[in-house]
Length: 249
Ligand SMILES: [Zn+2]
Image 1 (tube, protein in one colour):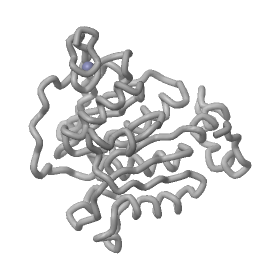
Image 2 (cartoon, protein in one colour):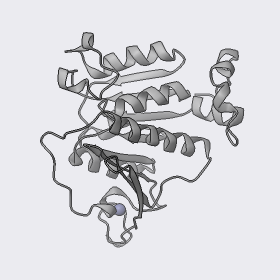
Image 3 (tube, rainbow, N blue to C red):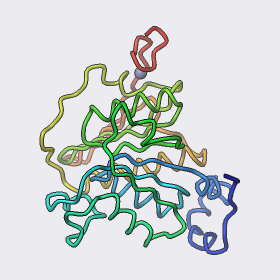
Image 4 (cartoon, helix red, strand yellow):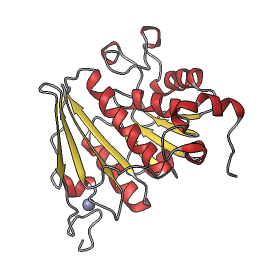
């Protein structure tokens, strides 16, 4: 596909962000020509895909196998009462297109597995982690590392959250940080504002990487404690013996 220029209405729509120092028309054109996958259209994936749509990422691939249930609606803000029983990706596409018809939204009803990750996630510029389980996250981590795709990890529980940006060859991967897979929760308690906050941070990371501004959260894990409203940054290191990205595998 050839590099697409900005239309008059896009110049107006994105006026307030094009003004951000370092962004400019060039940055906006990069976003328009970028492709981002959001894996999981839940508490993280709903607000993440909303803000990616609003900011003008050209193509957004949204992947989720589930339908909206009543217990989703406290946090999965693309799902309304009238959407119960419908596939999340189909509902999300409708809402996102209403917000910004210029953005191409590709809905995929699937669960990402080791066998289908290549086909389902495909060739994108950035992958956003909207998952609620470590099994899939680690599949995405491996896929992104082996294809050199930046992976924006986030996870939430209650009023707690964590986020880091993984860029292969330029810091640790998720397996370096969590050599032993954390336990899977059967039912995670969560206040909707927590994934909303983390998803906003994920979108900031995506935008920074695509435009090439600021300092991405590589080699740093940001822990957020909403109960005390303390944010803490922890340095995370690459392991040379990491089975996914290490040089001494
Ligand atoms: Zn690693």
